[in-house]
Picture (tube, rainbow, N blue to C red):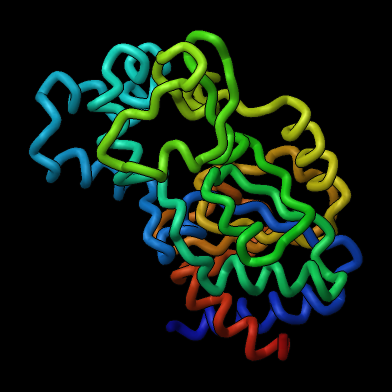
Amino acid sequence: MNNVDIENIDFLCHKIQASKHLVAFTGAGASTDSGIPDLDGINEILKNDGLFSYAHLRMGVFGLLNPNFAINNPTEFYRLYRKTFFQPYAVPNSTHQVLSQLERAGILKSLITTNIDTLHQKAGAKNVVEYWGNMRRNRCCSCNKKYDWDLLAYDQKKIPLCKNCGSTVIPEFVLRGLASYPAAVKKGEAEIKKADVLIVVGTRRSFSSFDNKGVIFVINNKYNSRHNDKNVVNITQNANEVFKILQKKLQL
């Protein structure tokens, strides 16, 4: 780890301890060490699986997560979904655990995520704002009957079918066309605007709405921050390793 990142982690510790309204925003990079791939990892799975046709590969990840594709090609959809997003037995890593500990200590005021894996909740976090919902939300594509993930996890070789009408059960975030929940986004943006310290983990998302005088810490070992602002501090290291260090330094 380079000296700049070490200094920035020390600065992050100081700002966490001094914060009055600490907020965290996590993306896919927060969960990769729990075995859930990010976009690059999903693309690698698509290329190396050998079971997806050239036409499917040309569609890309977001084309395969399209509701029309999922409904009309359930076998191919669930092959991808169960190798990527749907990991009901995944275990929280240090990122999830430390953020949960900060919440329990009354330091972290809000935790916002675009992840659907529920790993923040598994780690014990209570105040989680989910922009995309989570993988526990599933619906029949015909009658809209709701299902938890148990139906999908029971036999992962089968396509889950509605017990009411027999149609395919699809994850709600896919049926919504990967659209975020407006109420969740509104709540998340309000929390971000109140933050004096914002920790951004594992996402390419930019935060132009963060227009107060707080400090943004971007923890991402893959992408440089899009921010050129003076209030942005980049830590270009693996998030799981960074939070292990934070856990020791903060004595959580």
